[in-house]
Image (cartoon, rainbow over all chains, first blue to last red):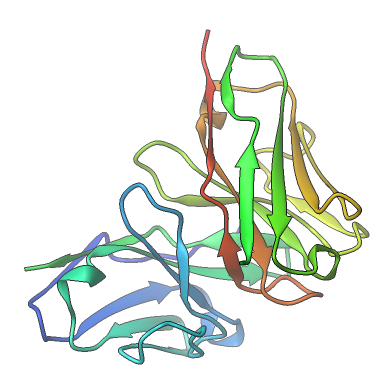
Length: 108
Length: 121
């Protein structure tokens, strides 16, 4: 089965840039989506199709995808960005949805 | 506004059954694929199942295949998850989520608030 690997945690100071990686075999050939989940809340889509943003998501959230790594970048980090972040793809070879292991972003 | 509301969760004994519902409003339900996603306490997200907009295709995670059944009633704007032969490891918050595109699986752009299922004797 297809596996997506994320770092367990990322720490960043306010105003700085956070980068969250998502590793998977030839992930660059897939469409990657990213979700933000705050404690006790449902996930929220923040980036879809590698780098597109849903309406209402700040431009500070951006994404890229190439080779074996996709990356979510949060620029000018704010305290309100503190949350768990998950990458996700659809594995067409198995017809399964796949989530990454999740990354907890802590704002120092 | 666009909304998904899950119901049907609760405490159930191992081996028993439970049916979850997800009521959709604010959009044309029959035009979108739908997913179930779950999250065990303190754990990450796990995709469970998907159903195409017209019910023509359904796919399941290996962990639930043969025990869970996803279905929908487009006349009632409602998605279902029938869960049979429940196990302790099925304990989780269950979310329904809308597929962003009408056809092939895509991002999950709208999520419900979740319903808790606890499997325990």
